[in-house]
Figure (tube, one colour):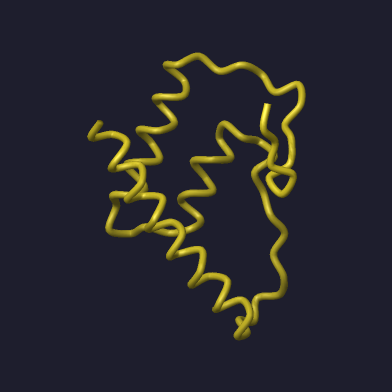
Length: 90
């Protein structure tokens, strides 16, 4: 089995039914297709099923590093949305 060390390993994760997985994908698609797309909305959907999907936040002041990171994350979210769209059309 190939492993990707940078992604980490999930051990002892509960198995999800295909219905649960499809429901999460549908919720994620709804968020990604929303005109109010935000990281917070994506994280909310993901944490509903992936309870350890959290990240620490720094102070409330936005600096250049945070802005660059958020721009990168927004670009990645857009690319993920496009990839999911392509997968759903198959």
